[in-house]
Image (cartoon, rainbow, N blue to C red; front, side, top):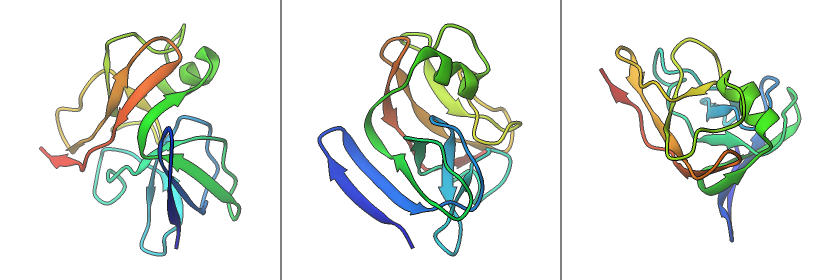
Length: 135
């Protein structure tokens, strides 16, 4: 099982990774407490816990930020959003229903809707990860 530590920048979940992932990808915890990449197509994999602070490798400890502010480079955000130039300031980001770990500015219209946060600027996001809502 993982642990949660409160820092000045928000809560950080630490747990063993069950798969590989990139910084900024959305993750959830399975029944054994391992971290996996989240996707908004079904429950429980839509129950996002937060975004990866660093990359993760299967079998190793990974860290995910659940609350507070998350800062990554524009290149790292592009890898997570599929966009260019980093985050879009002021935009709300949601968990994707089609790509594991991806976040997007388009809320899903079926499956489970999961709010991730709002972009402050091209490199910073104010996280507000919420429980998924079944549509």
